[in-house]
Length: 187
Image 1 (cartoon, rainbow, N blue to C red):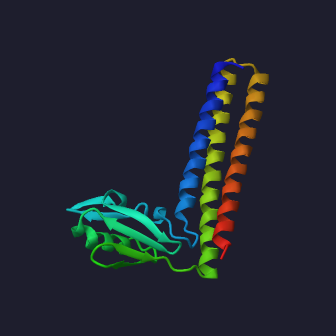
Image 2: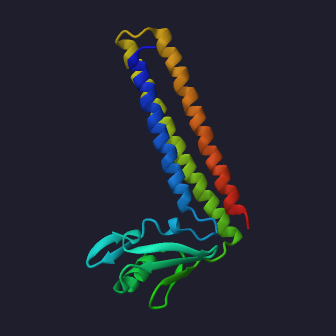
Image 3: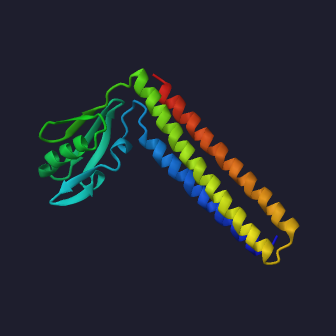
């Protein structure tokens, strides 16, 4: 196999890896009823006039399966952290006791669980769309190589390889969704 074809295959595989990694990070954010510090990822708080990620101004831990504990590094950050969590609109109610902020994670209703499964399916579908786009780009690159003199049989073999790579990554996406769905629907 020539190195141009190998480059196209490696590049496609690398991009697909990134798409699946992104899916994994998005699925972690879909909470499944258990308290997890990752639930507060992406929350920005006002740190002396600058929007700063919550995890850069406080320690975030789980007290138990239903409680998150946010311990700011500076006491003056308690109120801005509380506001940041409220603004994020995650359906969480922070309780400030003057030292730490406790967040009781409410149990999920059946309807909310179904909504979360829909969200997980949507994220998975987005990842699959990315995979198909990467496949399309790789196939176009292979066609260009063929026009530039790469033998047709080598290009056909490479196209088959691209398709099998896509199929394996789609399976990975489906497995991630299956695990997340089971996690969400488990009461």
